[in-house]
Length: 294
Image (cartoon, rainbow, N blue to C red):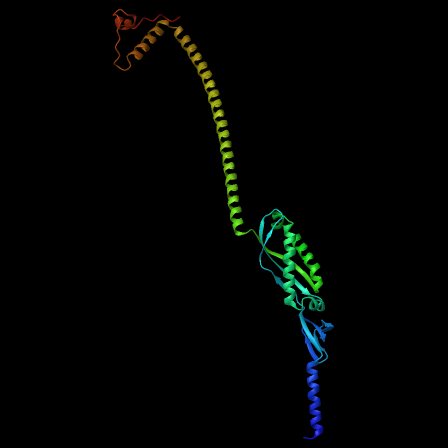
């Protein structure tokens, strides 16, 4: 192999090494920061193949996607001194790789700083709110407020907070049991009050029905007595008119009625003189003579 050919091969090898060291690729989900001797030179956000000075410049990659920040559940004291177990998370995006590199170096450092900031602002906002507000529909406004507060501090790291969510807000287990017992006692008290009111209403209804029944019976008895009196008076009048036409027969009929009532059971004993008027018909043994009708 001639010296010329060897020189060409060496030159091509060197060019290949320089090219391989000078080219770098940025994916669609990435953004890059080009550094030279520890100083930032430029930020690359466009995906594709890019050039840097070999052996002089270095490339630091940052994720361009929306990242998740999960924080462990924390105990928070609300404004009304109630303890809450709060589980929250956030979503963020690195919008300025240079500032992120200068402040927190990388995504891991950003997660650590954002966790502290999120927990601090979450305690602040929830600590100024009452329990009913936190667990009600106003929670959306609280999450927006937490997001805005975290965003103000995250701007210093070149990070934008997309969203903050309270995944779960519960009472501690001991408090939940105590509140459940108190709620059950309260419901039992309300149920007993409802039953007492029901019994009172039932008693009133029964008393009213009994009073109405008594009035109806009294009125019915009064009407019955009136009708019975009218019937008796009419019957007496009819009897009087009928027996007035034949007094002797009327006397005979009444005497037979007296015998029937006095001797009904067959065991009646009468102590009377033989000439008593009561036995007059037995003594006479004959039917009284009838007066001719007029």
